[in-house]
Length: 75
Image 1 (cartoon, rainbow, N blue to C red):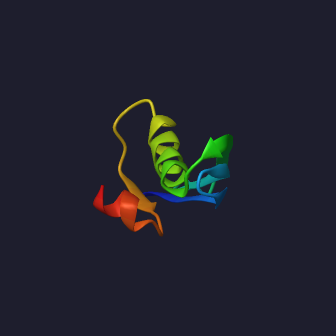
Image 2: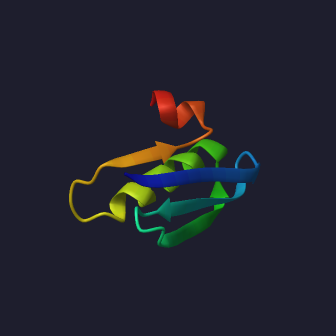
Image 3: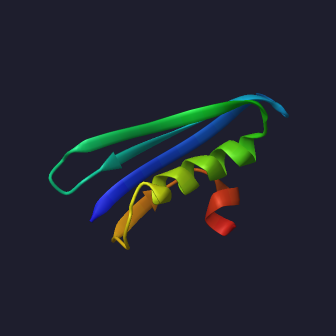
């Protein structure tokens, strides 16, 4: 199982925001992804992290995605 950890944050709402992803493969290889925007919201950055994590994979893959965002979990 591939483990994915995501998070997003924003300073102000809207404000400067960023997102980050850590992907840990079964062989313990680690991939880091990140990005941000100058004018955004916390929820957009949380979603951007999850979306970019999933877009990393070209085909269907078994994953475990961990997020602290209720918005992402329930959305």
